[in-house]
Length: 156
Image (cartoon, helix red, strand yellow):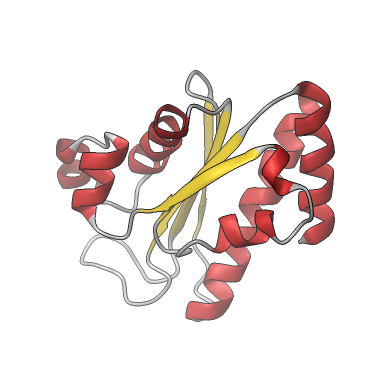
């Protein structure tokens, strides 16, 4: 993961861009991966672990109706978390996660994790659905959002 973050850091610094995170099921793991690389403070502004729905709604501006209609583990919520983190931290970009690393709900199976990345104006998302067990689900989600974000940065 450090290699991924190092590449992201180089692109962010070259473009003078900033990054934040909004995490649920990854519990700050995305932010921890980013800050494990020396010099992350030059582009990483901070992160919010929004584990409860009320925090997603009140701090990130996630629409309560979308949580009710689509579930908290949904594309809609993940994308709103990215936009909310960009607003909250005043950053160019943000990364987000929401999912059931273990357990699940009546609507959504265990191992389902939505990751999202982008800016307030352009957000992309991806659903991970393979249940590998709690720890591995979280690790895969962290790695995958970093990979997807890097690929997106490189394509711009």
